[in-house]
Structures are given as structure tokens and as C-alpha cells.
Image (cartoon, rainbow, N blue to C red; front, side, top):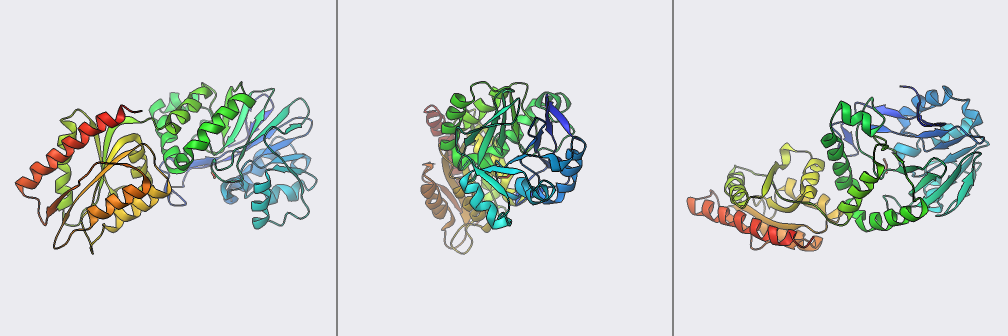
Length: 404
Ligand code: FEO
């Protein structure tokens, strides 16, 4: 691809990663992109770079617009490798450029590069940089999603460079939301936003709320949000802000997810009567088998639903390994405002369901207790108990959902 003008004088100069399916352990079935931007003003300014493998592509895109040695400013909104790995190449091509970065960003960057000869300016929230016809405003967004993170707003063109926030893992010929929606669908785009939020932004819901409020004050007019991954928002950028705010406030669907694994199909057998009980209460129910589903997809399904039931056989007095791995990942994402319960089969001694509840308590989830268990092979009585368990879970879920 070549550079794409996203606003008068502002160009996307990034790269599309069509092939990536595993993004440091995160499933990316649609690929992704590494977006960076070049502002052609009196002082030519580059905003972020790209992943190491795509630096050559970025340089070619920049060369289509200008000689890279003419870059005067380099804004580093975020130092993670997929966005900052190209900065040493840029600083070799434009050694007189000044890097604009947060203090924590500078401290992180010096662990990756020899920055001793680079001109650097530390910026804080509210600092501005005049680059000619345009003024850039910096907004620190620590822990959204790294300590170094910040956003940059072009005042005159109401454009927010938002780094990872509001991004999506999508590889596409389309750069803008309106183009993507007409080629694919609004539901695919929204699904990608939720997927990204659930797996990357979920732990930082409190920060999302604070920072969106701050952005509203410092950048009251936004008509474009340009993240570092995926599609650029220009059709209705306020919509993605609202979607984020809703998720940060704990809104979700009145829906249940059953996430399970099984050894000899006994726990799997329990899924059907439980899901039937849930459905008979007119609650949507999504069933996910862990070893057949990437963890990041299971996390998204957990996040979409107000309540989740975890199914696990007992193995060596505790949870099945894939279930333990899922709950460990989930705990790190610090889920809030969700209800959980557990079920499973066991042989001579249980332990898995008990340990699931211990994990739920650590996460601060609303508990639906007690869980339901079946010895070796579920009997017709066990099936009835599973059905009742699913139904009771759904009833409580309706009440719990009313709180939000
Ligand atoms: Fe896409 Fe935090 O990097």
C-alpha cells in the first residue's frame, strides 16, 4: 500500500499485517495493522512508527511524501514494540528530529535503544507543540494501556491520535470505518472493538472513564479518532467513545456464557441440561469449549455476557489445566460486574468446582453458589440437578443485571 491522506495534510503511513494470527498469544483471525501518521506541516511531524518487520514499508510510504531526513518531530505516543520499533531507523534518517514523549516513555525507550544522542522533550498533559498551521496537544493516558501511554490531538483538525485505545485487530484495504462497514459489516467492526477491549483494555476500565472525561475537556471537538491498529473512526467517532464508556461502566448484555472443558465427556454432558435451564428462562446462552477455542475468544465471550458458568472435570484434585489457564488469564484482566458459577464431574475426589469458586472470589465476581457436581457419569438425577442449576442461575442473573 502507499500513504493515505486521512485529513488534509495528514497521512497514514503504516503497514497491514495480513498474516498474523497470534499476536503475542492473542488470537487475531482478521490480522491487524500498525498505523502511524505523518503530518505535512512547516515542521514535518511523525506520530508513532510500526513493528520491526514493517519498518521498510513505513519508510517507503514516507518517502512517497517527503525525504525522511526532513522529519522535524517524532511523537511517541506508546513505546510497545509494535509501534516504537521503527524509531531508531527514523532517528538515523532524521538525526536532528526531536522526540516528544512522556517521562515514563523515555525511561522505557532507553531500555530498547541507545537514545543518548537523540533530542528529546518530555511532555505532560496539556502541553502543546506548534508545528506550523497546526498545534498538537498532548494528553497523558497512563495505564491505557501502558504506563508510558499518551494521546495526541491536532486542534485545528479535531483529530485524535489515540494509540491502542479505540483500535481493533483488523487487516483491511479500508482505512476508515465507513469504508469497512460498507465492505464488511457494522457487526464485524463492533465485534473487533469488543474483542480488543476485552483482551487488552478490560483491566483499565476506571482509567477509561477518567480519561474519556479528560479528553472531553481538553479536546471537546473530535471528528476523527486515529488509533494504531485497524480502522480509523470518522463516520461517528463519538460512537466508539460511547461504546468504551459503556464497557468501562460495566454495561453488558443479559446473556450467559458456559465456558468448559472435559476429559471423558461427563462435564460436557452437563452443559446441555444447564444451557437448557438458562434458555428456558429466556436468557441467551453461548457455549465455549476451551481446547476448541482460542483463549482470547473465550475471554471476549465472557466479557459480552453478564454471567458465566465454568465447567471443569477434577484432575488431580483441582481444575482441568485448560480451565486453570483460562481463569489465570481472566484474573489478570480484573473483570468487574459479572456473575459466575461452576460445575463439573469428578471421580474419587472433587476439588475443581471448589477451586473455581476460590478463583471467582479472588476476582471479586458475584457468586452463584453452590456449584453442581456429578460423580463419574451424570445420572438422570444429575441431569435434573443441572437443569435446575441453569435455571436458578438465569433467574439470579436477571436480578443481578437490573443493577446496571
Ligand atoms: Fe499495539 Fe500496546 O501496542
